[in-house]
Length: 373
Image 1: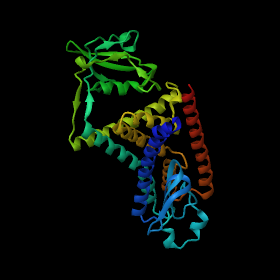
Image 2: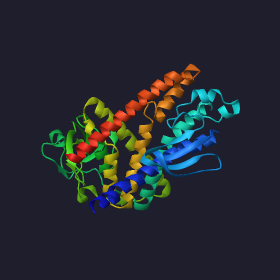
Image 3: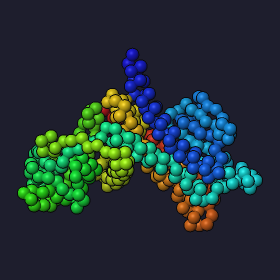
Image 4: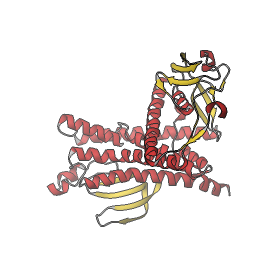
């Protein structure tokens, strides 16, 4: 019974969420590739042995594979699913056939085809957020302080109950969530909080403290806190509704916030302001999927939007094997006037694969450590 509950509560939501994101990502590659005249030989959700599939009239094999941890589109003339060109095969093709390969397409078409996957993930996230905001609205609160935690950064800087937070480092804020989002990714980073008190603006320098907290599911989360709290009376909690067009704008803004927050987190890792144990892999994604499933369909879809942005950003990393690595190769080709040699590309792909596998092993180790802890 426990195993059945684990499968239905964690594994199935995880597979459904990840499969949706992979399908959308690969569909971006597929659609732009086909539009560019590039032939697609395989479209797979998952890796490894094929479970079920069919071949369409264009010769594309659509399949569901056994390992649900990704997917791929294989183009005509590719050596493998990583889109490494089969130089020997392509060199012996006719000019017409070579034009239908990814390697033989014009540079801008190759770049557009590769970039389309991450872009599709960003579009999906915007669409999900837009639907959620238009259907459910968004609960907001004014950035007015109801309580200042003792010994917090805000207390040390002189923030008082009743102060209204109006700007952070000179950028205006309009909701308490704006404050939380800005501060959470800036632990141990000096900031200037502008508060309005008795009709006057006061600039209060402070340093958010790196704090480990437990979320609603008991998971440990590390973030920056300044120690201010609002309540329903001070914050004027209310549900904000949006027209469909406004909801799309909010979706774009929310997606942008996730992107900037992710880059900020990476910067914090490099500078040592945050620990690398916050990086999670498939086990943590499965755990989050199951936990969100207990909150309802909207929570799972919201998680899918966040993960879609993460997948888009991950694939844009300038690492060979990933989409970003291909784009770097194309940028080099644009500068040199010719592509890198097949040998150099193969070596780069091997290094990139080793880097990706190392990251996966590290993230999975963090997942296991988190579960045991």
